[in-house]
Length: 96
Image 1 (tube, rainbow, N blue to C red):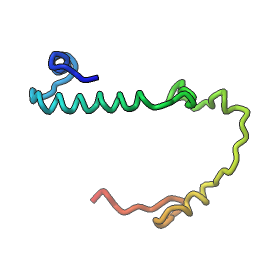
Image 2: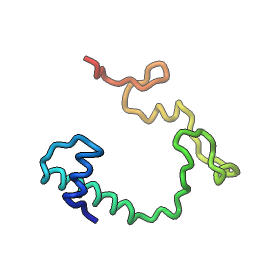
Image 3: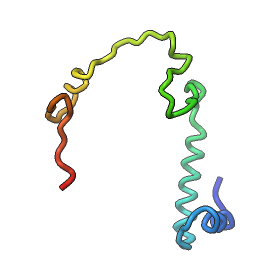
Image 4: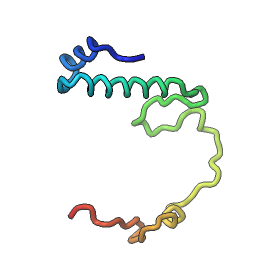
């Protein structure tokens, strides 16, 4: 599937304020559509659909499952190569 110039005009007029560089817009939009086509080819039949990304409720398929091999916060902190200060991973200052 690819996008036509008429569709690009509609997008630029009605949905976004894009520059009128047709070659770049057409290339970018076709790249996005190509990527969506690639994603549509993936087999997702084994993935449980997400009801909502904001709900913190367990899925019904996980209610009766036993959790195995859990880690505690201290074990996870030991995985960091950075220094641990007050139970947190120290990072270098990015706000200079």
